[in-house]
Length: 334
Image (cartoon, rainbow, N blue to C red):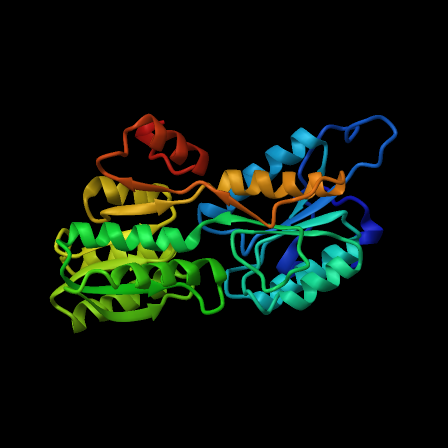
């Protein structure tokens, strides 16, 4: 796309390997009421990868179109690059956007630049994953702790409340997935016959998850179940269990959704997955920021919906609608 406001883009394009140029959201041409300055928001995901973040983008774009806001969408190369994400935020400060919707990769590492943004008069709404700051407008996210509890309870049920289980974590410092991991551990405490045997980070990569799960399966031939904290972890676990011929013997409960994960539920390799509503998260993140600029008081925390998806409920209208909003319906179900 053609880059606009070229003078304001000098700093952003200097780090083009992170940002790229263009990719602007499109709202109504007049930006709302006649004569008013059109607002510009930057929406900064952890990274523009997986199924989750493109779905967040669709929700944010829908809100921006509805409200007449120009949107700049920028994501780091992956979810383990907080330095790159900091550069993106700094570029948006330089650009002079009216507000930022931010999904911080790390709860502490992004604090300084977020508070620098706020000090410059640019309000920040945080989505998806928490930030250790009390200066933001609002935090719009899934109840990730409860998601972890749901994962533990489902896994306990399908393994008969006994046996060895493993936890595949995401990236250290990622507040959203760390909350899921905490919820999972806490909920398992009420099942005395379940024995957690391993916890390993997959670093946001399905290839890393494949490696660590393969190692766990080798070391623990009696492993009964696995819980993964995000989509790439679930994909890697599914592939490892299939490769090792343990399909059906090792139950996997994942987090997030994609066409690949829904197909894995249909085939029986993945028992179930905890599914967020990233479209609603993107939409509400923009809406809360807009309302704040109109003088409306924001709630400190806004929770977005979460569902357990299983083979049994996959065909129900409620789950189909949820997966459709996520972009995770398999082709033959559309």
